[in-house]
Amino acid sequence: MQSLREKLDDGSRFLIATELVSVRGSMSEASAIKARSFANELVACPEIDWISITDNAGGNPQLAPLALGRPLLYAGKEVVIHLTCKDQNRNGLESEAWMLNSEGFHNILAMTGDYPVSGAGGLAKPVFDIDSVGLISLLNKMNQGLGGGAANGGQRLGKTQFCIGAVTTNFKLREGEVVPQYLKLKKKIESGAQFIISQIGFDARKTSELRCYMDAHGAKDTPLIGNVYLLSSRVAQIFHQGRIPGVVVSEPLFELSRLHGQSPDRGKAFFIEFAAKQIAICRGLGYRGAYLGGVHDFKSIESILAMERSFGPDDWKQFAREIQFSRPDEFFYYEANPGTGLADPEREAPRPQESRRHVTMVYAISKLAHNTMFEVGKPIARLGASLCARARDPMQGPAPMRALEMLGKSVLYHCKDCGDCSLPDIAFLCPESQCAKNQRNGPCGGTREGRCEVDGYGECIWLRAYERLKHEGSEQHMLDHAPVIQNQGLRGTSAWANLWLGRDHSARRSDAALKDSEAAPNRPAAPESEPAPGSPPAAKDAKTAI
Ligand code: SF4
Image 1 (tube, rainbow, N blue to C red):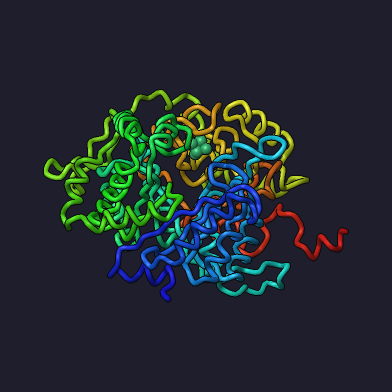
Image 2: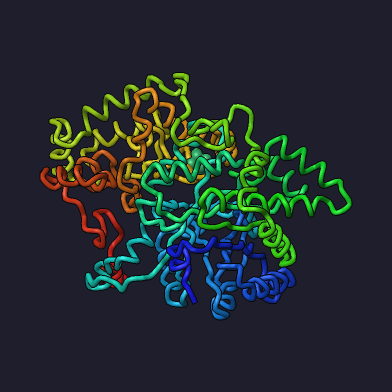
């Protein structure tokens, strides 16, 4: 029996995956019994290469994916467990990853996750301690043998064998959404993602664009799986209304779905054929497989796969012309090839200059102040480091300086005093106060036409950062730094002191910077497994304190 990793490496066969959406309630609940019987049929089907099980999909509490996954794994099917950052901090995620590895679940789809929308007794508190890039980095480090830290006597832990997947979405409207998504995709792959699944979308030009982008940006060999969603007229309406973050059904597709929804079979035959055509497009475009979602009965899967088998080898080219449901003024990275209607990798689309509305006076002052005060090796940075190191509390620095920092940053950026400042990473926009999911390594997939998926947050900070950086011609480099893993132990301490003294994430920003920092006094980079300065005491010490 081939593992998922082996299947992905073996290019001889196009893979088919199915998504199993978990349910609320225990395994004896009627909905869980239905899901289990569907899953049993999937297990018995040799054409299904793996079953993916969701983790509190849509931000709702549901049965843990492990419960549904166990019988499938024991029956010999490859299972991909979805792991998201919305409900657990990094320790909870690591703990769950150890459990998955111990139980034989070696395939994880690592995501930031949907913002919680419900909870028993009221809305759940979102966690977002780390993001998808942080989670991928964590799993990747576990694959290499995680440092055990002081609590484990410094021993390196045994290696896990995770096959790590990630999700990307390019079905976005604005340039400032699409390009950062591509940059984040690169970051996910650099951080350890071994296969990529695209988000739900209904535009073959964007589907082809993703493949072209990956081919042109060093990810030709990373297996790409196309998301194929079996629509119904009701679901098309939900998507059209923007009720599922990051998923779009344009006006023409909504109209088409509505029309077919009025037929005697409520559009079932149409939607089955539509899904089969999308699989054919993915196959034709060189994707490694298709990920079938929105399917809740085995008969539909059989019908989709049978129809796809009935197509001729080149039929997908015609389907790709039919299934192009973009929105007016949608941004494309590549021009369309007039012959095929698909992305032409030889011609990047022109990118008009953005308006200067996000290039504010505060931004200009912030940049100047940062370059003057915080660049490693500059006189003010050296002076700041020396003053903070000699202060009564080096975590806070001299009191007047700390007061100035807190006042200035709260007025200018609505700073939340996290102590591990990401302002310079996001064109001086604060992810703690202005991003609902505290995204520090690029945008989540939930923007709606440039706006944050969570009401009250306005335009996505990453879109605003992109537009600021584009004016300087540096937007393509906005994620050119080591993954930012925020140190929560620095909360309530001076971010200025932490930067000057090499305690924050910027000390690990890049190899070059790391070399500089190692050469500079007072900027030691803490080894991976050691608790960073300002961290809570290690378990051994905590025990003494108790
Ligand atoms: S501001 Fe952007 S990255 Fe942050 S949660 Fe909203 S859409 Fe996601």
